[in-house]
Length: 79
Image 1: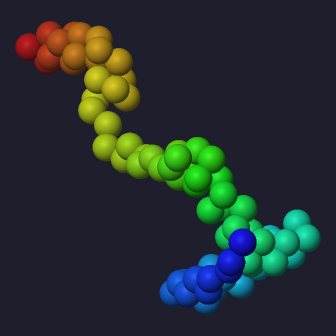
Image 2 (image 1 turned 180 degrees about the horizontal axis):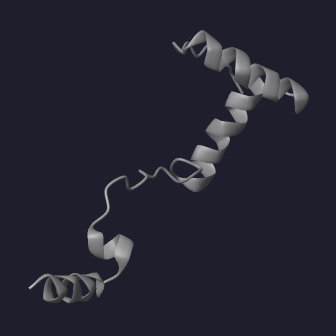
């Protein structure tokens, strides 16, 4: 199998920190990237979930659907 050079631009801190993890696993950067790319092929996609954390919630999601009933009781007391 012929080999090609893959050039990527990445933050130097990310590269260093990843290299430290790979080193603890007994891997070099080339082997780690090769493992990742083979997983992309095997999974036919990114081999982990890409999700966005929900940062905005409605009052119903936080307090439950019946939270307004408590407000009605407070309003009744103020009248």
